[in-house]
Length: 231
Image 1: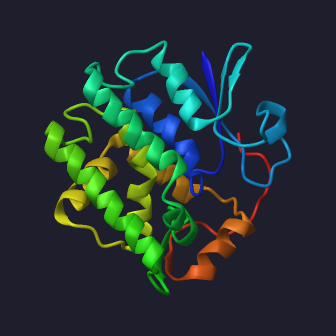
Image 2 (image 1 turned 60 degrees about the horizontal axis):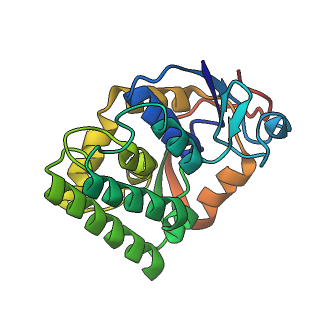
């Protein structure tokens, strides 16, 4: 069975991508969760980062590489249609390498509600591009997912954005807001969210990012700080 190594569900947008894909496609795996700050990351990941997938003695340590590895072994990771698949891969790759302002100003923190101190032009451009990209997919392929009626890898790559919208109250147009609601309603997304809220571990660097750019309106997490391993 696959082993998927991830970090805190509250913070780790990168971990969510393969996790939600495998859950949605019903690909069995053993979840191995380590909190940020643990020195054990290099024990299972050559880069010392998450996510990292182990398939026996094969190790894959990047979210996009994990998705492509799974696509070689399982159906429905990408669309069977070549044109749609090209669009999906382009959208996923754009998320994988872009939207730097969104990452900077709106780091993932499922358990908080935050009011941004400002919305810089770079962040607004990222939000407008997300609206444009999502609307294109929904209109071209009919929804409710980005490339049609089935959840594919492109949706997995944008799943963390849905949590960011929730945390920061980001204003989106109706099509994009509807897509966010679709993602948040998935049982697997709800499972991730509920587990994130229950985590007792805190990473001070992630917490400081929030305070740098916003004001915390509500914290729904339990109190306590623990930087050890969570398994």
